[in-house]
Image (cartoon, rainbow, N blue to C red):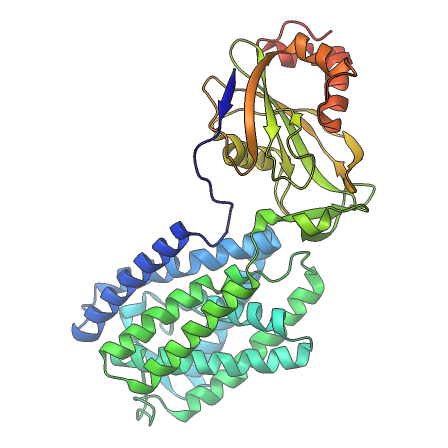
Length: 447
């Protein structure tokens, strides 16, 4: 039985109509919030709302950091910048250095030791990482990147600080010429921004991220600045509004130009399967394709039948060739099991499966039409009781086959299947230790 593909799917992180609609909806909500914040006196209970908002604003940049650095390094980076922000802000409150004397109200949440709200630990990092993402992709000199991080943080603060003073988040002693903000504050941001840039450069030099700094790091800052720009507009602050609009347009252009999807980057490895680099999927596949990480899935139904797929005719490698149920590449910082689940959902609309790795060290190299595959490709099996919904961008057709008959078909030289599937089937069929694993999926014979 063959099943034609009909649903439309969106790859992870790709700029799409759905993402555009979501962005517009979020901007509309932020503009509405800004309107009320600019025209209504905030009650003391707003500290809880402010705390929640700070957390929500920081989620996108934390997610992007995890995808970029891995969970451990992302947490370490956030802790470093969180502690640094609290120390610098507390120093300014106590000594006046580097921003000048000012004080926080209770509107931003509980003040640690009576000085700095805990929310400050999350409020600074999205701005630093957004600017770093921009300068890292556009500037080659580390020294120049540090200088630009400091300058751009001041530009960001030209939008944020006037609105924050207006709604009472903090106050400066004696006010200041720029909508109640003193010049000393912006000089202080040059200092703290320089420290942030140095810390970021040291962290990147030590940890050596294998992925390019992703533009997804700017998402949180984009929404933050959209909110403060709207608040400046509704407050009648001309300069912060114009600066904010300019920043937002620049970030949007940067995002469109330098965007890449995390699942479009394949992981290059050495002979011991240690990650040594990343490259975009399509350009990386050529006549001299480097060794990289992948996986291959064999999906069975309750009858013990195996699902086969015919690869889409538009695929760069083995277009139109019949193969096993699903295969794909592992993202950086992703387990093989999670990669397989992600790809099963994307290619076949299959979710909720329990995967078992049966050939953890499978490796192959094959070439067709001048394009080579060269993969360390663990093989997984799973059981599924429903019907797949193939993605037409990846799958032309699917069909169910009896395992024993498929083994015979693969061994018949007259038939043509993907070379990796043929090698995998032989290994699966000849390994007696797999009988128990296959048995729970309804497959009674492996020979």
